[in-house]
Length: 399
Ligand SMILES: *Cc1c(COP(=O)(O)O)cnc(C)c1O
Image (cartoon, rainbow, N blue to C red):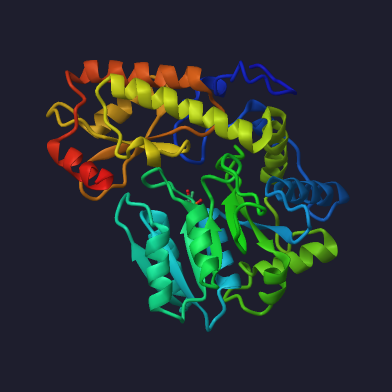
């Protein structure tokens, strides 16, 4: 197994020991060096680990271009949803009201979280794949002066749609409200610099575009909002203010930190920087997507979304209409060829998803396309064309 101490972007090594590539939006395929970074035990209170945590916070903050020192980064134990819950419970006041812009599972989950918190929440639900636009936001905010905060999903990972967060931010601040962003699956690959995109807090996790392993996430928030969040959280362990205050004071996490995962993440951050940061990471994923989409279309598959809304994170394809096609069989044939794909999450028509993120490049994506074509042959599916219903659905989007 090759062990590299530098990133050679022309040679993305295959996953270790015959593991399949994970074409999934996290957990995803990680570099060998990231896995290797977990082969050491750390004392959570020890100076070496505190230094690791400090480095990580600094590097994440640098990624949002906070030149004036107005923001801070607070890591939180748990998966991404824990961090979304921590953000909502800490930044939406108990007497505040949140507008959730939903167009898929993650927006709906955020609204469900607010119901658990018992805090006021209203929803714009655009269905499976229509983007929330500035005009929708303006209308909702004008109709309801009680709304204090808006939550936008940056890339809605359930369809792969890239939501227009810049125009949403302008609409939110134009009407004097505050924006929170779930950038879970986009942070690290798409720009979220505070100088060009206004928000109060943004959340992401270790196992998406930074290419770490799962186990914690982080909230990057305006310091004034962090200070104002004192005493607001519904939860001891998900209190962003308390975690921030303790970390500022002691350099330590409040409760047992996922030490190995942090060490792996710091290595992943080093590789991210060596590759060329957010711009280069985003460009590699965009090439992954372009090669994937072109190849799959050539094979007869159709994407759910028109090009304008295709993210470089994950792409949804319609399942072929041919009666010999069965997703479970297709999944198994792809896995046999070394690729784990992802079932779709649409309500109206059958679909599947292929992730473009993780430690892999366009050469891998060419092999994914070849594997998909070969799998169709093995299933006896001569055409990958989707059912007419799927194309009707999509036509509504473009209209
Ligand atoms: C991955 C993801 C989450 C968090 O999901 P977990 O399974 O809890 O890690 C939240 N929002 C979006 C948009 C995501 O892609």
